[in-house]
Image (cartoon, rainbow, N blue to C red):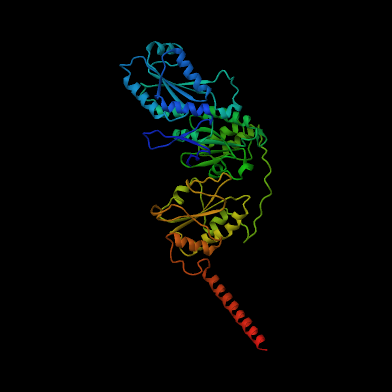
Length: 496
């Protein structure tokens, strides 16, 4: 995923030990038991020594019950395997602050060989990862019994072609289809594969006339053939409206359910909204993305499998624009008024371009009269800077966000929309953002940019072109003449 992870939801807890300058985010249940267990983990040694078969079973069982991941290193020859033991110990120190990963070690040859005989691994030294089957947030989709909750993965420390331990743990610590949280996003981003995101109405049991559990099960079936190429994520659409908009899903909650593929190369592809959602169409959609064929393969699959037709809620009556009063911003107006539409693909090149001033309007397209009113004047700002020849000195941009208010700019305080901010050309010399608090008029905005940015010498009446300036001067002259006539008539009336 190209965008940075969402900030942790409030309230949030952080852990800081006395020797480190960094704060570690606690991403687990906010219950006394869970928090106490996390504190105990921080105060204990990184590795738990397991000295019996019963202690191994108990270690795993406790982790599973708390929806945690357990890592157990099995060693049989301490003298010959000392380098591998040291590597595992160093990894355990690295995940000490991770609230989800618990590491244990078996150094007794007899105990290790017992689990070797139980087919937990084929040869020592080995690391066995055990995680809950599925995701606690996605249990609505799994049909497995509650007693069959363990999934084992094994890494062999002597294999030279295996992944580094940290990467191997990341790849295997999440279920095939996982629920999006700040914690899982970090892991998914580190895996580095294209991400298939399914946005659902999580507060409801169904989305678009289909059970959420059914949609997830179809995704899980599709994942069987593509899990080596992409990762699969389910997200709450209400919590991630901004992310939806950033990857190209328009319409907010009314667009749900929606599936998007976000590639490592910043390509994004949105599942065709008129197609049914089933294993064949989803699989065809993924295959088309990987082969660079867009949604054509999904369309072909829909002809074979018409199961799971999506019936989205009717949109609220389309908000009508009124020229000069309330106007939308779209591709057509971008071209006409020279405004750049910012998204995850061009964000770095456009907004983070420190060779120019960057003017950015952050807004909502739907259900925001103030946004549409301001867009009338903002588009004119873009046009005037271009007409005056400043296109190489300033980027005039727009960024549409959803109800969640987040943006690609971390640290930016939005408050109520719309918001206009300036990122000055030499922003490293001062605050990176300057907020506009004046009236929503073209001249006022342009003069504010001149005052706070590097665009200079706008002159008088920068909001008007030469023809408009002439008309303006004529209007002023006529107005002044009428004023003098009124004063003369008033004076003559008083003298009578």
